[in-house]
Image 1 (cartoon, one colour):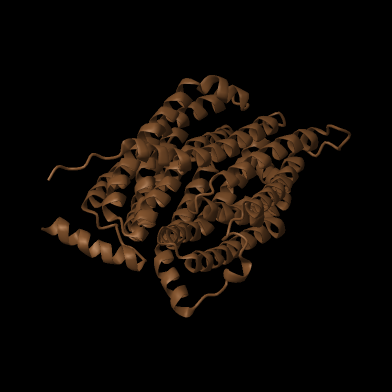
Image 2 (cartoon, rainbow, N blue to C red; image 1 turned 120 degrees about the vertical axis):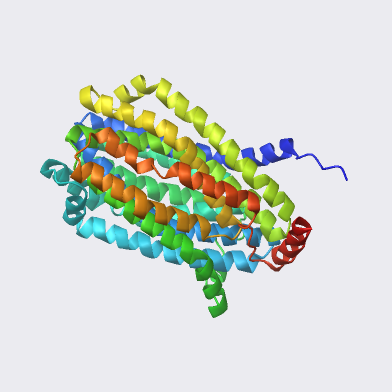
Length: 465
């Protein structure tokens, strides 16, 4: 029997429909962050470093709620593929409830205990003082950010990817405009400096949420605003949800804690290094933004097919998505290296901070090619129902390999900043090989729908014969 050719044109078209709006949304967010950094850089490198460390605290929050996003998207995509409206609504309500618990907790820590947070991330008194002022205000945006992310995840998995994009466009425009007004005191407003940047972030998130809700209502989206159907949970459903989500949640929390340890080490480098790291994290967001497009494409294009029982299609799409993602990320990193001089100059880097920022971009340009492949594979596994494999690998390698190396390099051996930074990525090639083997063996396909479960048995029988 002649093997059917893979439908590349249809496949690439489907990726484009999902990935391009998501990538554009993240690109807009990163562009807004870059503009923020440029504006804050005019206040001084200490301010840049302080805001960068505050961003690491929000990244820890991200790790706290992203496990629920990853688990929720597994359910959203597979239930959407199976046409189960009740399943989508229940899983969204449970996902959002868990996410908002994390967002409110971090918001309270930022607003009520900012001194504790800043002391954790750096021992530089000047940076701590500025960070405290910023956190007391920006902490109000944390629950709003989490709520916005929850809505975006549902909309993307139910093929409404443009609505979150429009929300991001509005948020970026609002944030940049209010930064110009509030940081520098334009249009008759007082010059609030770093507090103005924080206030602009809060208002921008409110505007973004309002736009998304309005557009979802106008488009007649039948899941996002079906409030009465979001909380009809049964004990069996909650147990199934937690069973699938718990490995992802543990993964994100433990990885978040690991990254916090790494950031504590990096936060005790010289002030020029802290400023360079803050700028690098903004540029890293650009790369991750493009990756996020492929990540969402994996969740939708693989997860929906597994849920609908089209196992062959899901398998053939999965590994192609990984390689396409890596190829695209390679192009993005190459452009960043080529254009590093004007970018870093615009973001206030000079002298030693410029040298360190450029070194970080070069190291990451190589590491990201492998890291994004690992992340795409892990997101593909999760969407198909395997929340364990990538989780175990990431946690084990981080805590037994990466963190000890970073601690030794930074605290014991006192190595140069760039060597400490490079130690953060030493596990990526090993995990990549292991995950590739798992990818092609197909053990990651684990449906949660009756259609998918029945089809998987037939698929395994055919592969075994």
